[in-house]
Length: 191
Image (cartoon, rainbow, N blue to C red; front, side, top):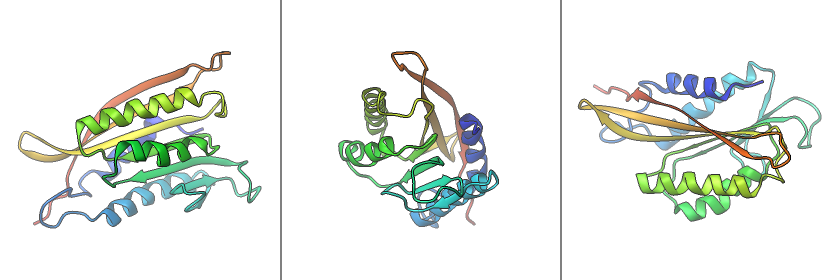
């Protein structure tokens, strides 16, 4: 079993002081992705899972070693997106594929460029999940993490917010939504 709230906390702790979001010596998108995938690779390989990347247009999955070439055994699907695409396109393509894959845990990490985009993305995800509730495997869980640069007391920070979605086991398969406490991390200091 994977505790998604704990994963969120560990993820933020891992990234603390490792990313400089903008300006001179900013961390490249490639390096940010390497850090993100490195964290999850370490986390899930310790649980005996193997990584396959990419997998059916999903950035990465972690699964049990057997049986190969089937959806059975997929424990985690990960989607990490730094682009500035239109939210509607993103929902139609990336999020729909993410919903369609059969995995116990699905983790999406996104960096919406504005508060408006973040709100639209969250509302779109929730709507898609509610509309897909009868197609999903009953025990699947989602963790969506939203990151954005900010300032606190004049210091450059990155604010991470997370929402956990799961379905209850009632006949109606209601969507349960839990918002985790936001976490602030410090940006990398470059001298």
